[in-house]
Length: 403
Image (cartoon, rainbow, N blue to C red; front, side, top):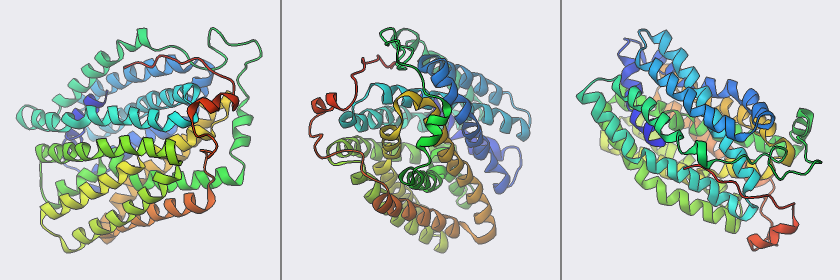
């Protein structure tokens, strides 16, 4: 799945530009994809609790493959936006289902490593993807990576039909008669506490800060400012993946050993400084190599924060309404992620790229300050070993998670 996404990523900005649209309009291709994910959060969260994690995890990649085939056949920019919306919806089904399954089966002292391990596998899959995708788009056709994306999505999901087991508390074969899903209002009530509201504010800032990175909208800057092509974008993205893999893995161990704040606060603080440096390179229009350095610093800082807000949110999720809760929480995150490339395009057009990068620096700082001062640590000091957690909540069977 990650390899498929990486192959398609470098072709998206170039494919958008091929429709003869401006930078501001081209950025909508990323906004549409993120909007699809945002709109899907509440319905998907409800379905994750209603019909189970397994069905959602299997359905997401199938729908994603369909959207990629439709993208390959797009004849107008408007069509492209619709198909990207569908792809964002499908991608979020895959994400929410997996997060709910990890929350079901993971202990507090291992959840950070599970989530960052999942993200590292995705990064590894994307490692060669951008370079391969950029080469294919440049050597053959800019549409070809989308067909490959669809084929790999279908291939990747085949083992999961056998390997994935349902983990929802009320749908497991060994579930007791008393285990029933909580009503939606239970998840809503969990959001109405002050610590949770502050966490959601931090999530909004964090998602907004990283939205241009996650969506690929950041790649529009070198395309328009330096005139680079798909191959160059692919190589830069692969370099960022190489840097991010060991950082993300280390972050998971630090979260489980020292607490979630141990990566969130310094990670977003460094991300603020990296974006300030990137704003400087845009303001004086440095050589392309200097901007690449700033981009790699941003990606390295982002890797420190990779998975930490997901881990913190999984810690907070109520046991019998995890799907609904995560749907609400992910909606807040998707609002920030969806606004990010749109604001990037608007601010860049009105005030310049340096101003847009400075905005991300401010929101990164805001996320660090809120988590440091307003959100409680979810890893208790007395939980020194995973075995001690058996008294904290009823044991759950370990589900087999597909490759």
